[in-house]
Length: 49
Image 1 (cartoon, one colour):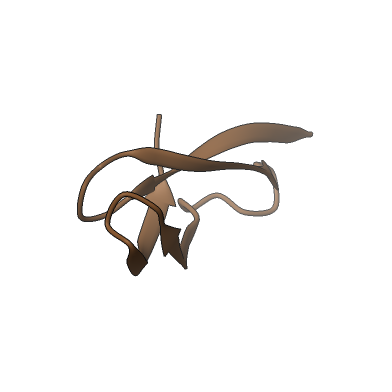
Image 2 (cartoon, rainbow, N blue to C red):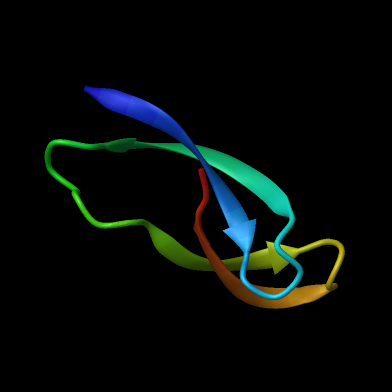
């Protein structure tokens, strides 16, 4: 079962992206490097609430 999650910037804490993940296969929180428009650079984005 896939659930929709939001990705939150690690520096400014703004929620910039949304994606889906399979919560049965991937139990830990998702983290990826993406471009943050407010910081204007690539930062680590973690799964938010």
